[in-house]
Image 1 (cartoon, rainbow, N blue to C red):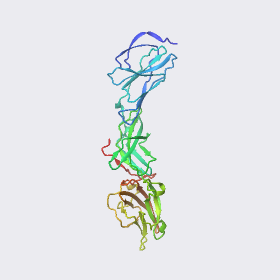
Image 2: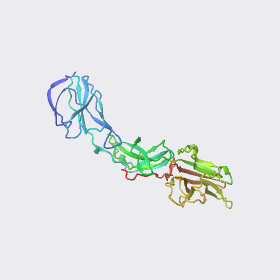
Image 3: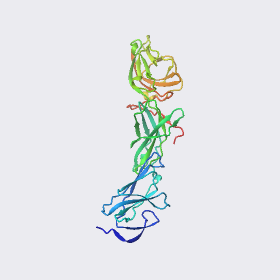
Image 4: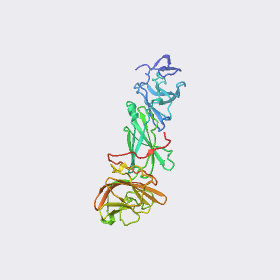
Length: 390
């Protein structure tokens, strides 16, 4: 076994970038390959901590390792901690520089390892954009992949954050939560409550753990939707000729599946609309029924998909019946007391006795978000950038 003691030698910590003079007695080699991994916190300027890792020394005379650090390049080095492991976790905002020594059973220290420097200049670019698509109980997020393309060798993953959003004030809540991580420039945020607005932000994390600034913030609101609903003409089947987007039967303000997309008797006065068949040409017409419900055509030409209906228009609604034409989209405004709701449908088929349509409805009062994506190839961004955000 190698001798554990050498003659007293005055060693300058050149490798550690230190101007102090330290006396080392141990024959153990300096710890090799010191590296670090930052722990992102959501704040790019305040990591949650740093994990130091180095090659383990197998010499039986090894007793422990000592970790030294300093907060700036002009500060003195100080003992940060001691461990028997070849890793060390420093909780909180890291110091600027670290080095490690090996300590033998007699308490003598080895030469220092090479120092490592943790500096925020190594951050990746923040995602340049963030868009979203409303889904039933979910929000699909998509963003620019510039953080990866600018430095593929150092890119690790993206972190996705969310919080509540106040539609009235246009502000995100203060308490943010980590939704998840992904290497792809998209993320499905699921298990969300329909009609409850959310705010989202995305950061990029490097292989060393440096977290970038956040993307522009984005707000969006999940809402129910359904495909291929069949409603009969009143003259063909009265009990199945009416439709109500949402019937809050228990008045709890929450949209349960059984309360949504209700096909009902066309003779009821609490439905949103019923279907009338013109006896002269057998055309089918959408007739607003509830006193607070009105309707308008969304566009002057057929739509590729229900996803083409984004925000409900502010005006142009009528209580008059309107013809149901295949491919066309229609938006409904429902005013009940102080609450304003919006629904949308796109007619996919018109027969002599019935019509088939896709629909969506926003259960958040006053929120005009109507668009869905689902598993369909056609999709358009919903939500909006939060004013004044990053």
